[in-house]
Image (cartoon, rainbow, N blue to C red):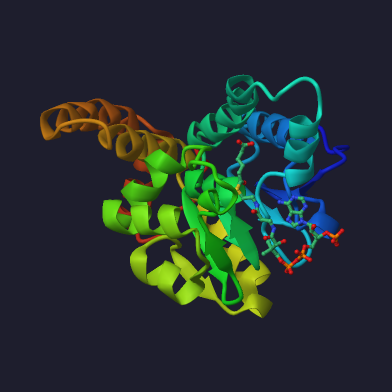
Length: 265
Ligand code: T3D
């Protein structure tokens, strides 16, 4: 996997890879290069069997300030207007790469997380936020509708009423409120964000990775199914889980009163 990106740092720690959005002087505002690099890194992480958990975070004092607005401004000023659909396809590829990742993805959020950057975090499986986090569905703030999957993920996480409130008002939500409404999973002191994220990532990386992939498929696909279809899918996926080495290992470890050791297979 490439590690020589300009706007994304890639750090391996055993079977965890951390991808850091790295434009701290601009609060990690996402420009075209960062978007392309982040997408490449996420897609590469999906393919490496040795990577069993992915962490996404931001360098400096913010998780990310959304789309780089200087790029929008240049497009508005130029003779060639931005082709919005073509532009969005690039974001969609990233969102789908995160959602289809066959292992857990954690977003570790500190400081500002707004607009498209918040919606990238919403595509991740688990969000840990520092107590200084400020989360804002900030699209209406610049006269846009939520994109990057926000219209799909936000109401599913917090319910339609709160999603509409967040999208219409485009105001900061404190992390305490975000935790209360289920926008983030855990709130931790800023000084402990890195340590707690690393501990959770290692716990997940040492888990039954293939089963995690099946769990993600069950949960995410069931969102768009009725009960009957979800039960059918559950049967298919349980058959696959039942056949994993990790399932056999866990049952054997329990019966022999020894510690379980998952290999991810
Ligand atoms: O393309 C698509 O369709 C995708 C969708 C995109 C839409 C969105 O992402 S909507 C959200 C867009 N983002 C924003 O509206 C946030 C704009 N930024 C701010 O409102 C403020 O910067 C913050 C409230 C986030 C933080 O304020 P503060 O006072 O802590 O920091 P600051 O001084 O404003 O920012 C530090 C620097 O980052 C500053 O540059 P400078 O003056 O030091 O040279 C600032 O201009 C730059 N910066 C912050 N956000 C962006 C940015 N530069 C470009 N684009 C940004 N989004």
